[in-house]
Picture (cartoon, rainbow, N blue to C red):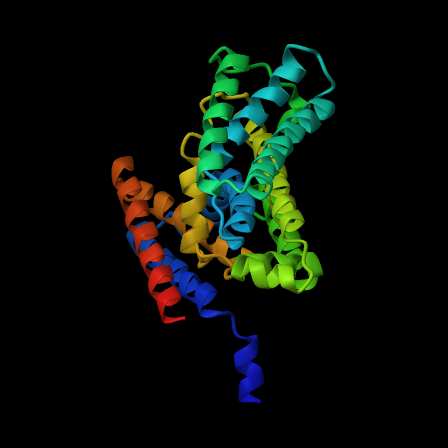
Length: 319
């Protein structure tokens, strides 16, 4: 009975971040009466929904012992493409959104092809595509924000009432994507293959897993998530911003690592990433309510990610 109970408990890599989230929430609740309100929690979710969706793709890549530095710039490119297609070219907004998502997915496929076919390190590949995506975004947009976006493209930035709390549709979409990805990794063979490739790619190959196809699929899925994040960016801000996503790559990596996913691959969870995203959001929101300058918020985030990586390193060595 005790063994069964232990098996049902969340792994330490998820339980630790959850405890940290609870402790942080209790601390900020003691510092501000506004923190423990439904409207404030809704605001936190709204503030993290873009990075939260990007972190889904980042998690898949980190689980395979890779890393993606291009995600923020790819997201910005997707948002500019879909908004300019709709505004300047008069394309149907839904078709324009699909085109923006397709561009992000294509860049994900390029990253995956370079990693699997040419065997380039993911760090170098995504560093290169980060700069390419940034340059294409600036060239295509003329470094100008795209305004007058059609109302239909801002649906996920709209809200509905749940009691006294206003909740954005984008938040609901983010949570739905987390649930679907969690089920995929937990209950499907391709999902388990992602863990196997990250844990030991050679052993996975010898057991009959098409490791290159798994890796390519992971990078394409990550690109798809970045495209969805670009749609949420347009919906939330109401514009196609070529400057968006400048720090989202680091924010997504921070959330993934804080959430307990190992940079060595093969260990981690989508639930942990969601908790990591919420930890980052709670710290920034709580410090803002306390009147702490934004530069110190960045400092705290940096300390958190170093502690998380150090913990991961020590756990890996013991393992």
